[in-house]
Image 1 (tube, rainbow, N blue to C red):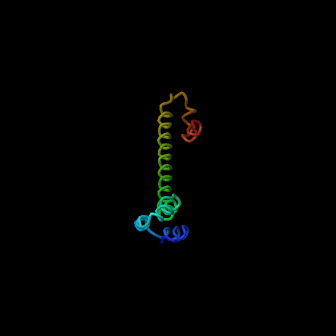
Image 2 (cartoon, helix red, strand yellow):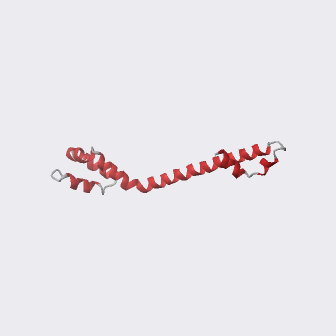
Image 3 (cartoon, rainbow, N blue to C red):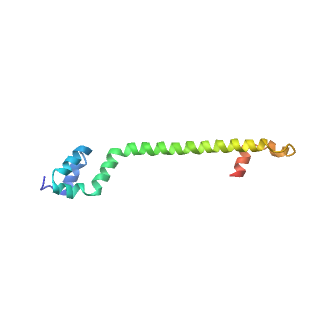
Length: 107
């Protein structure tokens, strides 16, 4: 192992799971210095092993943000509806306008 070039060590390491990779790193100070003390191997392993999980997590976060945004819109519409019902009866023209119209005017 001591005589192998760094690119071959990298090729071997990317096929190991994390516990085996950690053992591989601790097997030799040369391997540890050439391979394991550098960012590319860990970045590659994270991307390779967790990219689907990260994608799913990011999609979940986007969905939650969209749902919170929808909730805020619903709350604003209810607030506008309440304000419209509190208008004086003499302003009957305003009462005939839809909530969607007022919402678009306010935003």
